[in-house]
Length: 161
Image (tube, rainbow, N blue to C red; front, top):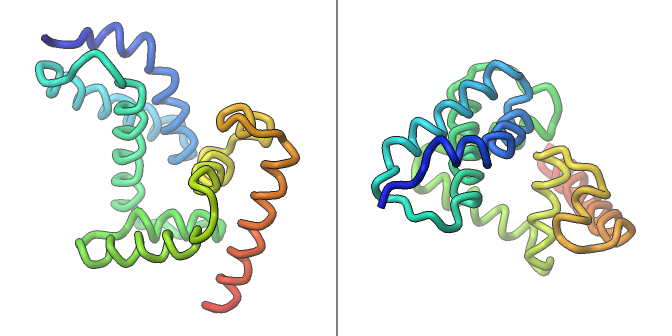
């Protein structure tokens, strides 16, 4: 049974647009990515089931935005943007495996929610309060985890450079 694409757009379009804005940092590019997400939904509407669609749309938006970032030939503005572009620029299977392994090693010993927190705060740009609400933790707990992640990232960056 086909999903109601218009209903999905009304219900989840703002969420998808926020995700695209957070990753692409430009309104026009974010709107293009939003359109690409729903073009894919139209193509797949006969195969989609009406459950768990918010997660699917969020993932589709992320993948489309990362593909856009990969195709761009611009200089990163911050080291966080540089890291995001490096991850997005991984093209072949071997490089993806290496990137996945490095990410796994970076978060080794952390709770699974630490990786989620890092994405919510550093990539999506959520505030401490918003990230805390998203994962069901206190703001002070979020602050402590993010401080550890920042320190580890800084140490890794210094070791590499």
